[in-house]
Image 1 (spheres, rainbow, N blue to C red):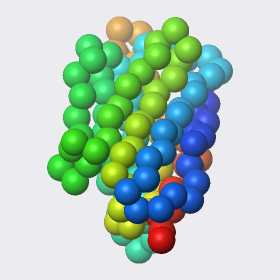
Image 2 (cartoon, rainbow, N blue to C red):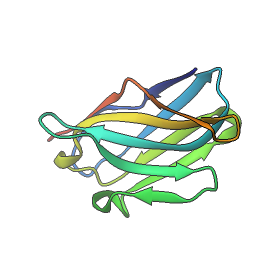
Image 3 (cartoon, rainbow, N blue to C red):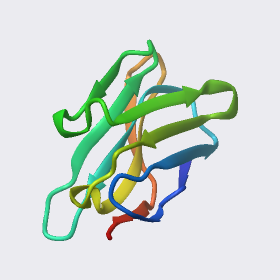
Image 4 (tube, rainbow, N blue to C red):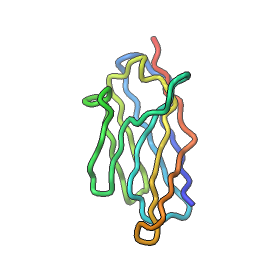
Length: 121
């Protein structure tokens, strides 16, 4: 089973930056896809950025040019560099992993508990 722990959230002023980290631990097999979602009060959870094992990335339109997702496979970590933050970015950010086992026959989704990002002046 994969355990995901996020860190790096906090309070930042508009225009500021934060770097979120997600560390995977426990017993796991092949990680096919990792990414970041966010959920603000009263709104649905939405994809922010993702990265496949191939290195291919995907970003929500509203973060393109501002956020960057990256990996460190040796450390089992995923990062989200967030620049030019605005108040609309305020949300709980969650780490997400798709795990595949037995040659892709079994697939499992894993979620972290989330880290709060608050952008306010």
